Each structure stands twice: as C-alpha cells, then as structure tokens.
Length: 384
Image (cartoon, rainbow, N blue to C red; front, side):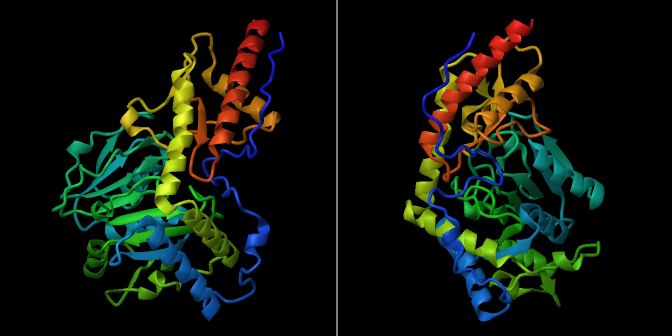
C-alpha cells in the first residue's frame, strides 16, 4: 500500500542540533567584508572580535561587570578551561542528565581526580535540584542537547552561595532566559542556536569567578591554551578581543551577521518566541498522536531547542532500527536532515527548534514525519 506524500516540503530541511541552521536571511555574500588574510591582532581583527563580545553582551543582557572571552575548541574548550582553572578550591557537585554532562563528570573524576559528589538522572529526567549544596561548586548543563531536558529556572541556586556555578549553556543561550545573577561561569559555542560556524567557544565569568581565578592556584599544571591568569591576575586581553589562539575571522564575521539578524527580529525576546513556537508545534504534534512522545517526562523541563522524541507504538519491535529507518526516509526525500537521536541517547528523533528555524518548516516536516511513520509501519507489516 502506497501512502500519499504531503504536498508541502520544508523550505529549509536542516534540523540538526549542531551545527544548527543558519539564520533565514543568510547568504555567503554577507561575509564579503570579513578581514581575511589579516592578523586578528591588527586593529581590524581586534575590532571584529570586540564587536562579537559586546554584541553577545547586548543581546543576552549580560551584566557590565561580567567578563566575556572568545576561547578555542568550541563549548567543550570553554567548559574544560573553566573546570581546570576553577575546581579544586572547595567541594564540587557534578550534575548530569545527558551525555555532555556525563562527559564533564568523567573529566572531573578521572582526569582531575577530584572527590566529587556526582548526581545523575536518566535521559528524559533531571536530578533533584533542591538537593544541590550551593556551598560547593556545581557543574551542570542548562539545556541537555542530547536528552531534551532543561533546567526550568535558577531558583534552586542560592543568592548567598559560597560555591561557584559552572553552567554549560551551549544549546540554551539565545533561546532561553538565563539568570545571570545565578551563574558564575557560563559557556556556549557559535554553532548552537544562532547557527554560527564551529570551533569557537564563549566563556562568561562573573566577578565571583574572577575573584576565584585571582586567589586560587590549582594543584595541577595548566596547558598554555587553558591559562586565564598571569602573575595572579586575569589576562584582560582574552576578554577584550585578544584571543588565546588564532581565531577564524570568517567565523567571526559569520557570528556578527547572526547577531545582526537576531537584533532584526527583536533580540533575545524574538529569538525565544521563535524557539517556543517551533517547540510547541512539535509538542502539539505529539499530543495529537499515540505513537510518539517527548523524551522529557516533565513538561516543565522540556527543551525548546533540542526537542527529543521517542516512538511509543507497541507494534515497533526494534526501536533503534525503526527510528533510523524513519530518519533515513525523511533524509532520502530531502525533507529533514540530521534528526536521528544522539548516539548515546535512547532510540528516537532529535529536532532542533531554535530561533533560526522557521515554524512553517517545522510544520511541513512534521507532516512528512507522520507519512514516514505510517510508511515504515506498513513496510514492517508487509515484511512480517
């Protein structure tokens, strides 16, 4: 039996959770003014880098007293830099509910060899945030890219905390309202949410984090690429456009264009509204069907960017195989690319709903998902 295909295709079938879709107005021509072949230490390079830093501050509403730096190795580099520089001064709690958070646990326990309190939750769940001891340092992801679970708010973080909060916010920045007064270290990367090019990380430090850096020396040696202080003082240049290693000025220009687009659609509020609308379209789709559901069990913790789904139809005997087959059908038809679940996550789909994605494209893709599911179920029945 042939099942009729939907009449409408997404204008942009790119729903990858990283690198994410470019802003809808993106063209390569927008990068024509990039200072290629110029030193990033020249005036023009420093100016572009500083513009990226201050544009980030403006759009995200980061307090003036917080320091923002561009660092190497994407979000991973920024998180590692924070942990290797700051941890060890006091006890630490590692909070993990998805694969990247689990990676930070491994680094702290097996590489830094700290006696950490580790709190974990299964995919789709979140740890008991009320149990976190805020007099210890805490490391956590705000939005679990591979599980679709996000921190609902920052109310669990004490205002009078003695410890530092180190937050991996790479798939939350520019899509969720981060409470800066609760966050001492925040990291993200350009290829998330705004669709920038990869390899660069952002490291945001509160005054409390800077104080720790200037008053504490870790017991372990720091590689040159990780060093944030010299002579007991913060290396100020990192936070004013003088990067630790050579940045791609093409990637910088791309990020600046994304920031310009974000301003044009209403800044952070506009970005959040677009992500919320995209995610709600997926939520409504799941609510109207009995064969698919959100991986995040609690609606209050569901991500509005990396929306993770699971198939629940009892006729499916091979969950991983079925999910891959559905994703393959959608890719073959050119209507949805890169929506398979992360390799360490439960079988299912992962749909990026950040602000660079058009809601009309989400709606069109979901019609095709319905088609792909029914087609694959029919094929499975015939094979049996």
